Image (cartoon, rainbow, N blue to C red; front, top):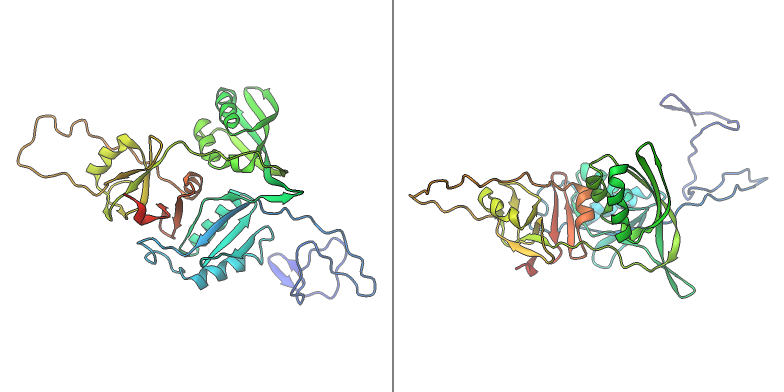
Length: 339
């Protein structure tokens, strides 16, 4: 079939340069050649970049499971993931050991787009922290590296250089053109986890960052770990303004008042290392007395709302992101281990 506007039209022949659609070949894949059986000369295979990042997808197991999604069963999620393989040649899906799936792709953004599409389609599930895919050649463990292209106003370049230096980035090239600094780095893929949101903050939204897969190199990086723990809810209930106002001095809060929460849910980032159990459901005790000036200095700052990409960059190995059509939540893997 050929194309006329948005319509497909059946044709009996096509010439070089025509764009056509062919049906009837079930086991064909990207890069293969459809040829004349009498003279089958194949073109060189296209090199599809192999996945460098993997995440574990699983059925939502939080106390709020099944409340907000239309498609939430094992069968429905598995069918959707394997259906994606028909159109996304860079994606890989494997069945896990515990009724979950190991989904591999070409970076955090690649997998984040898939997650967001599924969420908008009505799917409910949970995902783990992204992990790099390593391989062993001649007894040496190899890890993926990225080439990073950065464009930022000159006043922010020092901060960017410092942050990438902490992540073991290797500066390849840098030039200043009219107050705009262009930088080129090669950096381990795992060191880039969590950097995009930090980069946007450091450059006040004026920086531009692009990455492309470089190659696999000997694995010499342990990955960049966040310095802060999490603020973790210790009981089921609804968040209260009074409690959040007191908790905000302990770190950065992710939610506002009157939000349903459950034990083990992460509602903020601790200002210090290590997790902190907090009570966000506590209400102010009512009395018949009020001192002068009471409540004058109390003010609840606007919370830092975490979208999907922010949440994926934030979590560590002890946490998951709960994804539903209505909400993105961060939770501990072991809900009942929270104190």
